[in-house]
Length: 331
Image (cartoon, rainbow, N blue to C red):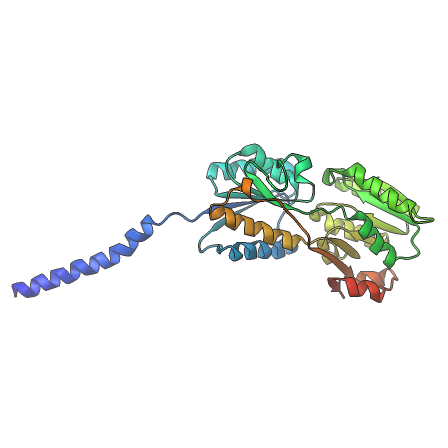
């Protein structure tokens, strides 16, 4: 009887230890790293594709959201003044990495709040000229990321003229807030126009909703043959695409998201590929890499997208040569 009691007590003790051991082991495991995702816009249909690409980059580096990394998303809803508050929240939270997407403004907001937490940005303006990093090859400090040079203006102008060969008077809509090399873009456009006999170019600046509406009112009066849109934030895509359709102006944009929103044509860096690259850099930093040692990636994947439905509404026939070059054709 005494032996039986002893065995029973041993079994209960071992069973209790078996239950307690996993709990103790889990308690000793390090907490899951937290990534702070900062964006100046509001999430929408286009955001889902980019986030999937960002997640793919993380997975390629060995991290899966919810399994071995946590991502906290903060959206400024196009209120730029909120970015610094949101970035400060990440600093108080002591996240492992801050991802600043959607242009240079979120990157500056994060940079102003911390010089120690790693920051991975996506920017359409040269981060060296902006002062975000010391150089593309050796960023230094706590920042690195992906540079998407959107100023492929002459190439985009060439595609637009191939689609609208009779166009002689071309309006160019630029947002000075999204084009640091504003003067060089204008110079590049004017030089391209000078090389083409009879081509006239008029540059119009606009940043706010009211300024954009006023610009299209002037287009309605002056009736340019086509419109070349410079680097604008993608949260303007619906407004710009709708206004171009309303005024029946063939327009070319810098990002594919504008075509997804109903725009006619776009040519520029792939935003999805940029987000994938950013996710990969976050993964490398979580594994111990230092931002100062990770060269800024200059996006080399460009995509031409054409909306044939928008072309038909404008009475345009997309030439087969242009369709053959397109990475994406929306029917």
